[in-house]
Image (tube, rainbow, N blue to C red; front, side):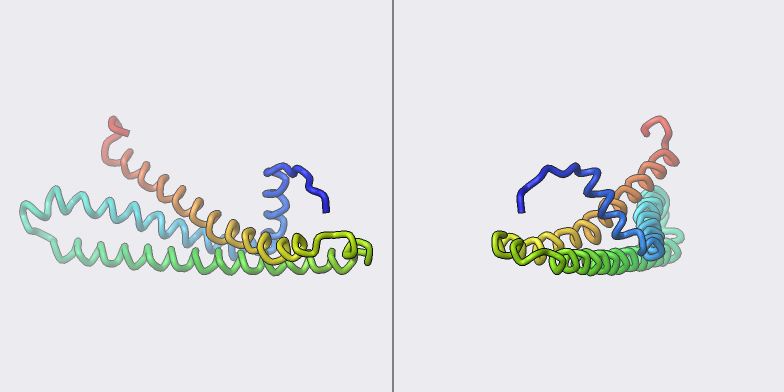
Length: 165
C-alpha cells in the first residue's frame, strides 16, 4: 500500500466516470440549479421597483409582494430539487465506488492482508469514499449553483446599466 502521486485532473476524470450513469439525474439537478439561480436574480429584479416606484407612491404593492413570494417559492423548489438530486447522485456514486473497492479488495491475495496496514485500508473504505460523496453532492452542487447565480446577477447588472457593468 505505497503512496503515489495522482494528478487532480485524472482523479476528477475518474470520478466523472462513476457519475456518468446518472447523467439524467445530474441534468435534472442542473435544471433545479438554473431555476434557483433565476430565482435569485429575479428577486434582485423585483426589489429595484420597490425602492424606485412602490415606496414613494405606494402603488402595486400587493402585486409586487405576491411576485416576490412566487419567486421565493420557485427558488426554493429549484434549490430543493437540485440539492436532493445531487445528494442522490452522490450516494449512488459512493455505492458504486464502494462496490468497486470491495471487489478489488476481495481479489487481493492473503499476503496483501498479512503485510498491509489494515487501519489504512479501513480508513480508505470508510472515510475517503465518504469524502468523495461530499465532493460530488455538496461541493460540486454548490459550485454550479453559485456560478449560475453569479451569471444571473451579472446579466441583471448588465440589463440595468451597461456602463457600470
